[in-house]
Length: 481
View 1 (cartoon, rainbow, N blue to C red):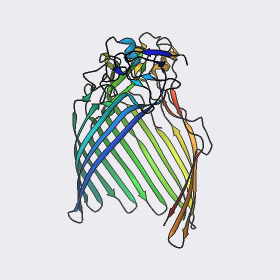
View 2 (view 1 turned 120 degrees about the vertical axis):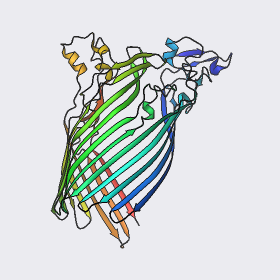
View 3 (view 1 turned 180 degrees about the vertical axis):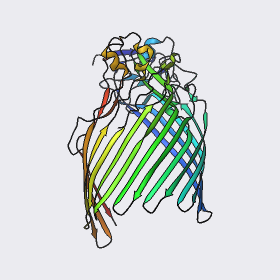
View 4 (view 1 turned 90 degrees about the vertical axis):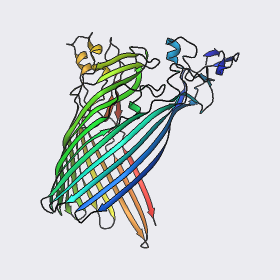
């Protein structure tokens, strides 16, 4: 280890000189310690045989401390608690210190806090009421809710880059929300039911998406708004001795969503904070579920989802370099209207057979088919600045702006179990669940495009992908007395 360095005025002590092996790379823990307090009260009243009213109040207090601790110096003697990018780019006393209360802070003890330290406070109070009425063949319900959410950041370090906007409490944000829901079920007979449900509600933005960089400062995202959600679902239910089935159509709109994240951006040779606002999405599709009893204990089942989840707006994004409050891209348009929502298969089928034996043992096998899963796209590559110098006729350009669809995949799962009863009062249950019986380790379940972009070589940074685990099994044993 040859990285010998000299630190003058170590730990902010004048004349304190430290000579030793300074670590350039370390292992750290990113800690999240949270506490929650819940209060919930529910009132339920049957006005008569047909009318029931339920109401309640709920209050939640959430406090989470986010900070980093040292795990391993990887052969060095110490690391200095500074921002390397700020040290490289900015000029001024203490500007690179992560906490100017401890300038030139020497971190050399395992478990020592460094880098960033802040608390997230979220309080929410909610009032709600539901009423249900039975008209005989028709059941209806109606519900209302109102809530107040307030949250703020408390910085436990005075960051040298933002000395006036990092330590202590941020502005306290308040969001008032409402929700309305209603629905009805029509009982054609004891076997056939039809239902229709709808909801219109608003939701406060998440804490993590409301601050430009909660690790370093109290700066709030511009133009924060409540998210708006409109949802309608209707369907048919069949319940007979042999066959049970459901068919549901659903449609949900999400409006005014916000996303904030951080990553290294080659264009600035720096760590940046990326904020995207005005995100609208629509989820719609059909869900089907069936189960047929062949003989007592033996049944087959199947479920299916055919979805169409897509982005329905051209959101705007802003980029802030992490060591500056300056906005480098402000309200730039992201051309992703019509893109498919990532993170989940939009087409899914599953079916199988299960048997429950009279002598308290059971076994089952199911197969699964997943399709229409998409990589999470990088918004930066769907902007004018990313492609204005490229040849729009090349395959490289098309690969850059189009969305990647992941391969279809199949899995096979199973379970088996047995229950034992002793002396009419003791129960022993043993069950084994096995997933991915075919041990297919090449299945790609998701992933994301890197936000890093080299304009001279668009394919330089390949997407990161998630792979399905191989064969997995879970053995559960329980004893009840």
